[in-house]
Image 1: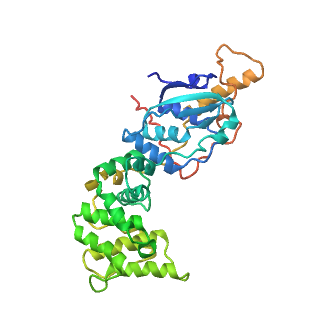
Image 2: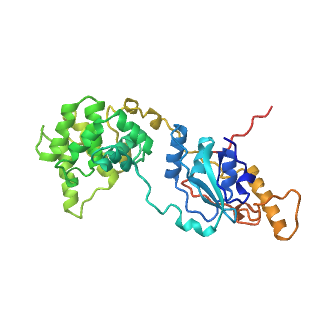
Image 3: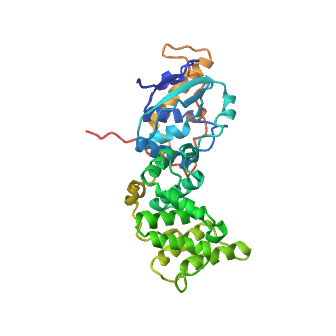
Length: 359
């Protein structure tokens, strides 16, 4: 498969081209990213994780360039390729009218739950929520969205998660536990990972029946907390607080201890006792380094776009040059010296291109 250069990509053509886009070319294309939707750090991380785990596949979804030489689709894939420092196999379509941006990505995408449902998984949406919760616990985050290949692989390796979801969904309303997906996750961890099937079943049963299994039952305490939160407006729990309370209830329940006092500013530090992400193949999630804070484009990247911009201005004035090539008439104004600098949301982080070692 041939590598696509910036000149090849920007040369007007009605024929789509397939090839390899390197991280350097991806940086140059991001210099053409003007007037696009706001970058999503979560979307970038999901795609980047697919690339790093060799799960990013060629799907025929194109990188799209307008007749004005502006990037109108593919920004998240390009940023992920830069961060992962990996080349991507994709199709490039250029010479598109600028107004097509308004109709791109307006259709419903196939979700992970759709994929599981096609494979005959019951309660597919709830199973996906439970698996995402396992990933969040492994990464020490409040929430995390696993990729579709990750969810399919997890389901293949740990089919017991479906049993836990069905058990929680059967006759147990949200009012009694607050977070059904978290309760199903705790049952799965207790039953399959920690090898405490009887304790895990008794924990879920306490929410379903409301009957104590020991004095000052932590599960019953959390159950009453949820019911009170639903009944009155004076007292309510946020998602993080509900999550921390449920995890603490499980930690106490397995040791037959009463529920301790929870402090609101410590809810993010609560973890499931004894849970090792490596036991479910997620050690790489916990050891993952965060996206680094670096400049958006290097000076070399900007200079490439400036040269193309100057050629475009010469052509607009009727000054032809032997070095000119078609397709560079209107390069993104973001790279022009007269334009305002490119501003990237603070939530998006790009890794800096490595500097060659000096001899």
